[in-house]
Length: 529
Length: 111
Image (cartoon, rainbow over all chains, first blue to last red):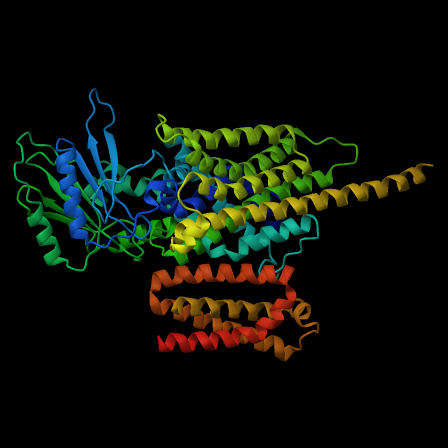
């Protein structure tokens, strides 16, 4: 414990912030990108770029999906129909098949054009935005449970760092709007304060609600107390639609899909449908699960209706009139995921997420800079400082480079290569690994400048790569009002510009330091003489 | 349209908060503000930000609150960047913001 409360808080803020800051940067970075998860998935599938928003009604799309699956996969154990949205114009028709010897069931995903109602040709295997979404809390190659525990602790550390930060940076509200780029370490502190304060409600909200999404890992006691099966029992109660339905061996000859949907549309005429799932479609125990669309309501789980496919009768509903607890829990998760957001709010989420990344990055850079400033002239840096500097460079500059690599891999890998989606992800991690190795060997200011220029070049060339490998480019996207695709090219160009600006600034600073050292040296010699 | 108006109001409010600070006012207008000017900017900013919050909430309580948080972040970011790199632009905003807000209000009422 330090001698004063203020000093204790400063110590806490520094070490809690530093210890997991690179992991936090990855979580924030991947989370920020996954606010545009469906848009990235759209960009990664050039075959979908030409698909227009549906002009036919939802009922027609559902019937087409059911007919398609009936012909294509009558023996599947589950059908899944995802209806188009402004973010995803295609109809997803997926079917799941049981595998022998207790292996995981296999999903086959297909997409239909919502206007011609035909399968879309030329789809490529890609994880799209789902990769960043999963990376945000599953950390990819790691064991899922371990990864979530790590993310839990990182979030907890972040929350502590935020609260202690508010306590120690007493002047953050007084110094609001203040950024002095020419003032050395002070400039980093200004950037840290500004990026923290400008999105402070967002940082607090996203960290707290992030913890809530994994709350039953950290705090399972209430569920364990209330339910005999503990968290499992709670989940069975909270998510009735996820319960396994036993399959009957008796075949279903004439499914009553029409009767079920007629009942649904008659009783809930204004309810938009998000997705339809049919379990055991070939069996007499087949059930139709209809998930309603929440629109911009702050709710995470969708309202749900379950019908018997044999009789068309309504079996059960869920969350049509959610309880206070359901609204609170679902609301927090909805606010965290931002799924409810329209484009305007989505961009605000993105800006705040970037502010979070800057806050974490400036925090860890500032720590290294301060320690380096305290070194005596002939004192060599410690291993800890070298490690922090290498991790800073490898993470802060390596992650954007790896992300660009992921996009390049999507465009440049052959369409028919086996395991294409995994290879895109491998490209991401390989580039990040190479960046980390280079950062470990070369940590000078010039290395930061080198990485900044490299990032500028790769992000600048990305729209050109896109134009050369697909049938569209920025001009055609703007002319055809394809705003999502145009935004990608504009964001790539803006990112390149930011890195170019940063590279120039770093170059200027490096030159200033050199000239200051040159001026100091003769004076030192004179003193010695 | 209504959310654009709320964003503009939020931006105007933070412009007011920034100008209520002596150092920022001096760097924009070249003179130190007197007590009355500082107070007017400060009170004005509080009233306008409340108005912005109300406009957002009038659309949807939960969604409006989220948008309001985002608008605040965006406003602080833009003002801080202008304050650092294009201080003289903020002088023009003193006249431009009320004009734009009035225009947008009229357009919102008409539409």
